[in-house]
Amino acid sequence: MNAIELNNRFEILENMEDEDNIDNNIKEKWENIRTIIKETKQQLIEKDESTETLKNKRYDEECKIAIEEMKKAREKWLIKGRRENEEQVYHHKSKEAHKIIMTKKKLYIKTVMESIEENQNYNNTRKMYQTINQFKKG
Image 1 (cartoon, rainbow, N blue to C red):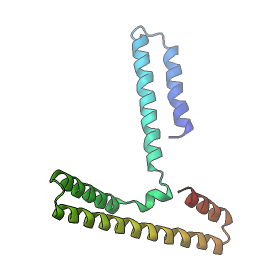
Image 2 (image 1 turned 45 degrees about the vertical axis):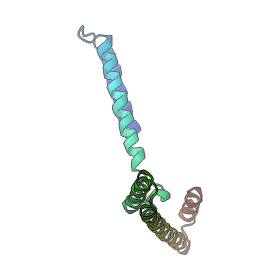
Image 3 (image 1 turned 90 degrees about the horizontal axis):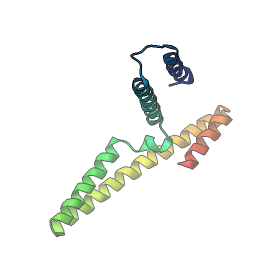
Image 4 (image 1 turned 60 degrees about the vertical axis):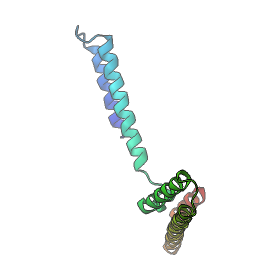
């Protein structure tokens, strides 16, 4: 959502005041203002969630599934009274999840480094430093 759309919404609110319609009482005006503010807030939140940081690019659905399996195995182990079999399953799932996450991280770092090198080779200094700074921030 850009500033023009936001200004258009507030112009609608200003035009509401110009109308001397008896049906539009204060409560109705307030409800209209609330709905416009809520819709604007929701659109801004959706826009904010769609922007990805470099860190979000490496943590994908496969990582989420591995961590969920690890959590379920741990809960099962704790609920069943810490049996040895459940403990082994939990440790196996934990190692598997850690391995998946570390593999994704290595691939991510490799991709970022290739991007930085490519920007350096094509003399895109600004883009190179933007990527480096974003990488340093996490």
